[in-house]
Length: 367
Image (tube, rainbow, N blue to C red; front, side):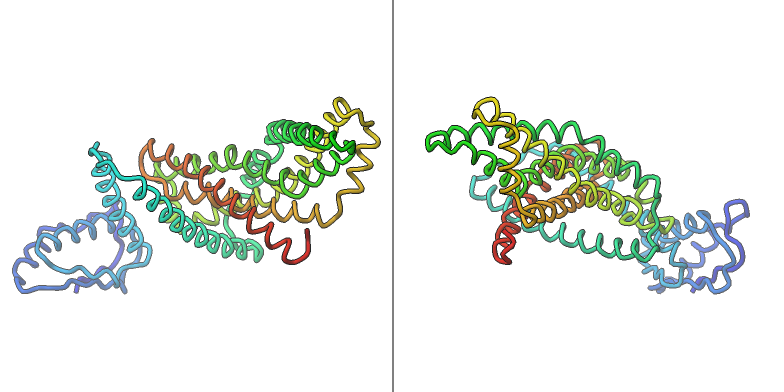
């Protein structure tokens, strides 16, 4: 048992390890070493460096070093230091160019399915942590910068209006043109307004918004958090006792959950205008007739479906981007891989969520 007492700071002279090494060598049958810090006044990285050197000394002599008696902050710092060294060693091995054996299509397909199920578990666990952080936010105990939340809302909301509006308008034009070609054969071109309006409000507006946000904002989230992982800023937050889930992930999830439904409404309006442009220029309809037909076709339950879907898609995009950023390695190549993986993960789960929500809406009679 080693007893630490008094102040252990770098500005004070710390004991030499030579005396302790000699003591350990005299006790040749020693198997376990424990610590007592009941009389420890204050400490800084000087004590952490001393204990880390003592750990290495124990490893050399085959002695088990029990850390339960140390302060919780010191244990976390030692675990983080050891984890960082292990990660660097693993990445050094993974960074070597090893020639991979050619795999069959069936094997690659099976590995992709396994990765999909693994990603499902990871993203669901991440959602659970996000819900816990959201509960702390509702109770006023979450720690993050409110100014950063408003900045993320601006970047993911107002700054995304041009690209979302352009894509939605063009998709509305495409739907209107295809519908006009088919409905003209029956002389009911007026129902182009129903086709474009219902298709955009129920599903296409939310889907377009979500896919654009996955490629624009979700990738940015993964790159930002991944770069912080490379620079060990996330490790620094954990060392300071700040939860990265609350400080980094929570404001991004809140921003997208709030902004995606609003962007979806904007996309719906631009999509309807795109269809109206085709209906009035090619279909020979008047703008008034087109808008009246659109209004009669769309009900509140259709709008509710689109808003619920957009909210779910926004949460998926935020969770995918933040999750891949938190899982990022310690190199520039790893940041690029995390960014790509965030976009792919978001689009895959958005597609799955769209299918599941469509079935649920039909089951509850909302469609």
